[in-house]
Image (cartoon, rainbow, N blue to C red):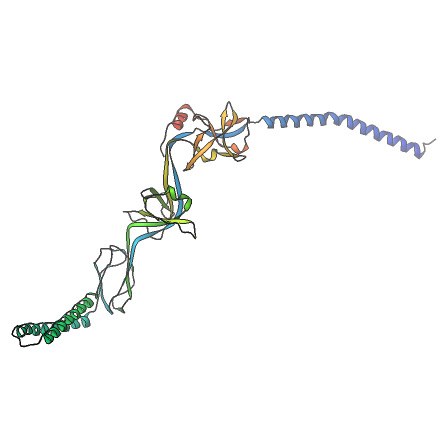
Length: 375
């Protein structure tokens, strides 16, 4: 007899169950193998050494500085204006020329003023002769004292008029008011100019100055005579030595700052007025201070620390820091000075981490790094 449909279904279900059981038995070892592999990988990851770079602390002078920015300006600058009207007949200097105080820069047409001066001179000579005759007449009693005094006053007034005419004529020669360099020329030959017309600008380049406004909390640290370093973007890799010339005795209540004047000399004239300077004022020095690279310092919950390598293990050392200068930080306490300091890779470290030093130093390089240096 043929099996019923119900019997066929039961046999099919039983076969499927056997198949599942067989696959389950086969999969259990495989799953266990994967779990073991994962556990081993996790264990290897936990014990894997972290690659780091190290450096020895160094000793050298380190400076405390106040830094700020300010434009470079000329110590003195004068705009030369025409004191009389006239036509420009001759220009004797050009932009970039050095001039001294009183040097002739240009000449104006002075014919009218020259004639006026000659006229006043002739009138003065005539009155002087009359005055001399009146002196003789007065001695003889032939002229009253009032008439004599009148002639005397007229002569003095005419003498003043003559001197004024000479002064006006001298103004046709335009002269430099200060020592410096011609930074701008505003006129050309043939121009007719009026009184108070700008003709030249003379700029003094020795010394150049910068005015820095410093917060009042720095007042006790800044004093005249302190060394200053000035750098400008236009002249890369060049530092100019300067000094604090003056310190304002008052603090601006509106800004809470005080003004200091910095003077800098540059015989090469590479430093120009108008350049923007980065200014560093040295106000203290620690000689032969223990220093580490700034990158070695890590912040641990508000405290500063470094990692040192001992027997391929990272050890955290709390340190007290002082001045910072040129990428280095002064260590006041916490290090002896002969440790291997982690300078790259420290952000991934914790106390007791295994490390691999990838820039291991030989004895000669170690000795060179630990030798005293001077900044």
